[in-house]
Length: 189
Image 1: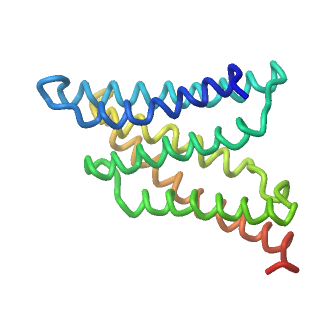
Image 2 (image 1 turned 60 degrees about the horizontal axis):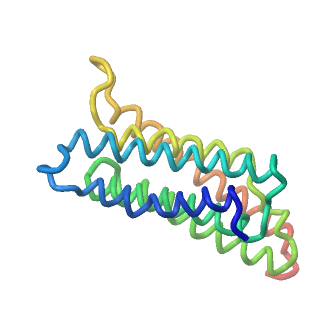
């Protein structure tokens, strides 16, 4: 069903190729700092639509199964695309990107398995997962922008610090979700 929250989610999906394309514009179109600023702004816009579509879905009572499925997919695709771009631009370590992307794929598969067992509530998003996502959403725009903010404080330092925190929380939350799922589905293991 197409409604305002689902339209925002589809818009977010549409931003992904635009975001990736801007990151690779020729320098005659945008300088590297300009491309980084536009890419960071697009990523922030996507993150804001994520927060806003969930709020609207609840506020307008427009939650749908389609939206519940598509919203996290759009989020994961945007973050994964951003991490791949950052690794390619040599602004983020590949190991951190692999940890975060691997966790997202693993937990998505785990949630699918738990849903098949009728126990999807056992692996609902936790506060730890939300803090991890917040760290990612802070790190990525800083790494995309990659320009000095004030003397002695660079976007790279802030971005990498937040990405390390996100990777650590990624591992901790993955262990948490696995333990919960194992307890809930132990008979089906």
